[in-house]
Amino acid sequence: MDCVRLVYPTKEYEERANKFIKEFYEYNSEINGTGGLHRYKNYDEWLLKIKKDLDIANIPTGRVPASTYFYIRNTDEKIIGMINIRHKLNEFTLQEGGHIGYSIRPTERKKGYATTLLKAGLIKCKELNIQNVLITCDKINVASAKVIMNNGGKLENEFFSDTYNQIVQRYWINL
Image (cartoon, rainbow, N blue to C red; front, side, top):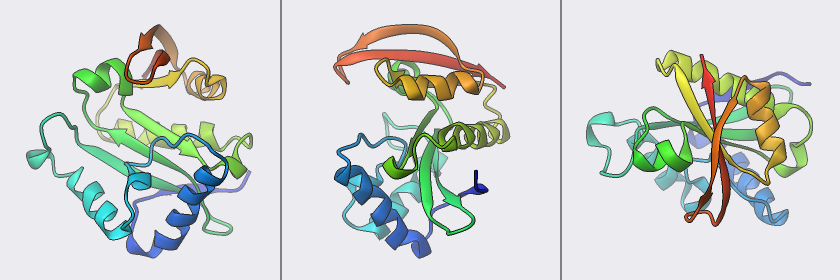
């Protein structure tokens, strides 16, 4: 597998980020771990949003500080995936969202990128002094569950989520 790295989003990645999100729509694939990129038509507004996500003193009620990264392949500078790391948990993220959300673009799946992306994200968690990392996934997303378990995840429980209208699994990884 090619070498990849986490990169904090900047203006120079705008075109690649738009292609990344567009691919999810083309493949009718669920979008996770993008720090809300798919909800913004204006990339500059999204960059401002992820910068505000790091402004711990001014985080709006109901939100938590978070870092969002692109997962860039070194050989062609293509965005392979994205990861969003929540620095703290609130009531919702403790129950349903967890510390980490991530995604791999549809055409790059089943190549081992998700496992290495999560591993890189866990290193960031360690740097943030998060020692017990909660990651959730839909029970039907067997691939994501395997990625979490490949990174040391232990299933704590599963429950029916009214928010997502399906069964959610909660995994803990101790760093």
